[in-house]
Length: 186
Image 1: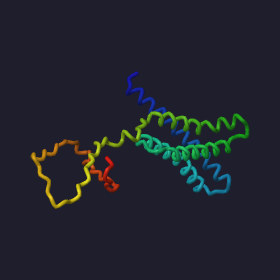
Image 2 (image 1 turned 30 degrees about the vertical axis):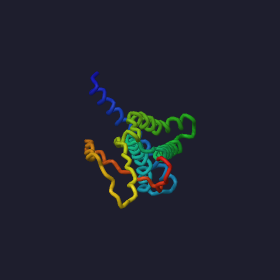
Image 3 (image 1 turned 180 degrees about the vertical axis):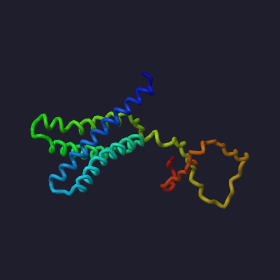
Image 4 (image 1 turned 90 degrees about the vertical axis):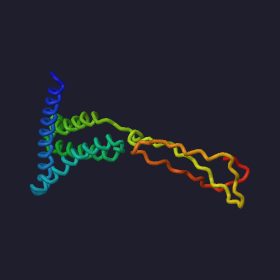
């Protein structure tokens, strides 16, 4: 089997599991909402909100991992919405251990699918995202003004030209923030 064929088979399986798990989860959330007094359209609105929020949070989690941003809140919300979906499925089940297990299969399949897909997302550490900046040169504090100009014996040296990539910002001149104290070497 070629890599392309294997990828196509994996995508078909992913879509089939996602579609079936989503349909079962939508139906259970809708039916539970209607059974507890909500009109049919609100039942569907609840199902859409719960299930699509879980899918969106999975995508957001993946995007944040790629960017090296924190994922704690998004991960917690994903677990909360997945548990809400799972609770609706179990509540609609026959009140027996096997009824609960069978009803939980769509949510558990969805969670497993999300975990497998998200585990393939590369993690970029925040330090790798930022470009390397050259060390900022320090400049000396200007000498106090005097009436006498110092005598120079040689011509001043031409400043060194350092080429830098266009994406790198020019070096920043760092001025010392403390006043000059005579007798202390900085």
